[in-house]
Length: 305
Image (cartoon, rainbow, N blue to C red; front, top):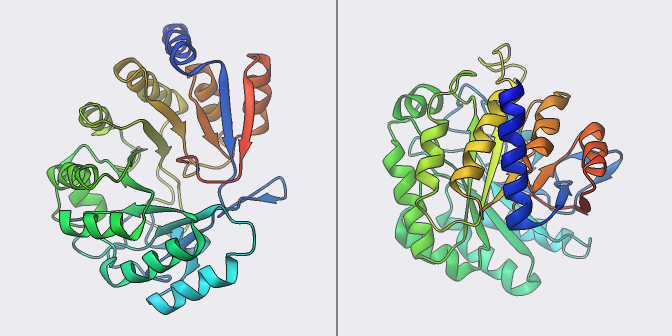
């Protein structure tokens, strides 16, 4: 533990050197935080359904999102909310067996929304080919969020697809070639709570010109095969964040909203490691940031913005 504290302090000092003594806390639009809701809601382009039904989620994480199933419904959602002071939207949905969301038919609607509102639009994507990336860029997508899994067996066993790590890497290349900013996400413990491909994921990400990386950790979602899985220890998450900081000192590191609720140690270690952003922080983490005399900001959007 003492050795980890020493490494965390070095990572924290490196973070302050590159990013300053500050931290931003985020309230995304899918959650309430102390009675406050963010202004960046999530929209599922597949309604409540998911073709893959991966063991860690089985579509249940879509339940916090606004469901749409066709472009007309998407346009109606934006018309309904454009005057509600929203900063933008996260587009997501359930993946099909090709590990992708049915994006193509929504692209004309996305373009209309962008032209009419100018709102920020983030896309949580799976595997996308280059031509689709070009169309998404022309439609006005501001950024793409992608889970980087560093192990082929994990993809096969958890996501129930024959896609590989190389397909994820190719998608990142496609997005960047289309000039869409990429925000890689690493789900710590996605392989049934075990640390398997996460360090390789960091090594893969550092080869790309990204300016941010988001860490989340396995959530024991009720009613899924992973409901009773032991989630990663906070120290495991800390070690990964430290590793990423040492390898990518100038990259913004965030602790995202998808993590086990009420496990305050992850948040506290994030402060110790000098992360730059935390979504839905526990009160103890906010207090620790104040103890560290950090300049604190709050935003009511996804932590990727």
